[in-house]
Image (cartoon, rainbow, N blue to C red):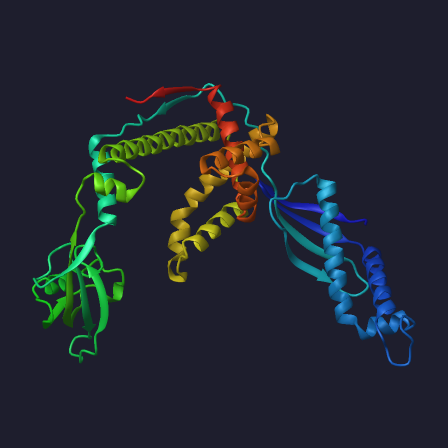
Length: 415
């Protein structure tokens, strides 16, 4: 197809190209489309495929026109890519399309292209690794969390205290209005589930007691319209439960898992915390390395890739419609860092031939299978069914890329 391409804008990863397709080229596509329609449609008085082309064009004018536009734009787009040697980052947008019968077709193509990433400097950086220390207090705090997860809640007949769990019937009304029937809520006092004024009221009550009081909504209440308002509140305290923690002994250790003693549980908790601290320290070094490489080798990011990353997190976190603008603004720097990191890893993996191979994936699956005491084939099938193999492949590639980088850079222990 003979087309004319004029660059209207070329900045970073953005391209705006004006495309002109001569009338003769458009007519050729139109004739082919009409011929295909004529071979398949039925018109009264004609055998299938025997209707005159002009009649078919007239009868199916709108459908043929739409298909011609789509085919011409698609063929022209492919030719633009071939002629301009472009590697697009996302689906292009067509703007200002003009097409009258018997005339040339013109339109603008708005493209994002993949950035050119040279990564000329990736070595000679000095990095700091945070100490992966685990304190006795850290172990004790983790053990307390395990105790808290296995706590028993028992009813009491006393006034509730902070950390007690209460079941209440709670109702509010606008100032001067009648208080409606209450709704049942279960609240852990002191956990921020109710506003302070309501919690204070609850802690003045005994089980089965009912109280009404005007309560002021805090100035930092999430709903701005309710901030600082004073409303009548009715509370019926139905039940109070108090938490009791299990004894910290060998029996507790056996309940938590396959541990012979409390000391064995503590040793395992310490090792898990140390492993986690090491992973955090390693991740910190990797992040420093990515940032230093990005500073030494600046490149522009395709906005569409950043937006796709943001949208993925919007869906994962189920961000409400009224909170999306704020979320997008706050999360954009995080998305940009992740996209930049991915591009650096992908570029080095391709350039240095560090991408994970099938053998690498098989070896990693075998490691997982050994830890689970399972057959590698079964584990592979399970991971494949769950869509986890790509994740494993990506993890291996990242490990290989960062291992390659760390051989060429200096890591010092932070003070």
